[in-house]
Length: 79
Image (cartoon, rainbow, N blue to C red; front, top):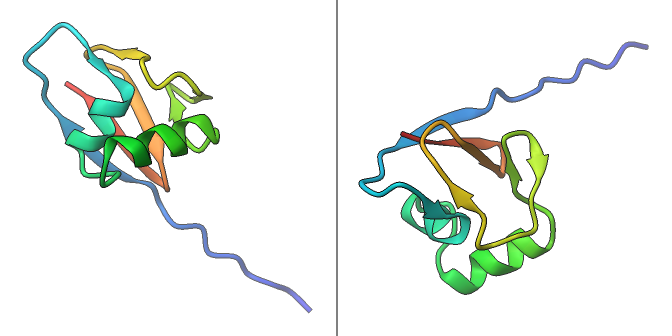
């Protein structure tokens, strides 16, 4: 018996920032990935967010143009 698994493709979202950097928690809020700053804090500290492919638990992590944050199968790119 063969079991086929369908893997969902990751959705891509790009957001432009007007500053040199943005904090990870603020970026997730800006992208509507989370509802509140408190929600962002929890998902980041629980290790549910990846930055540039690696798990990041620093909510104050500075993201700059070209960085990517991944949460719940969506990749958010900083432009």
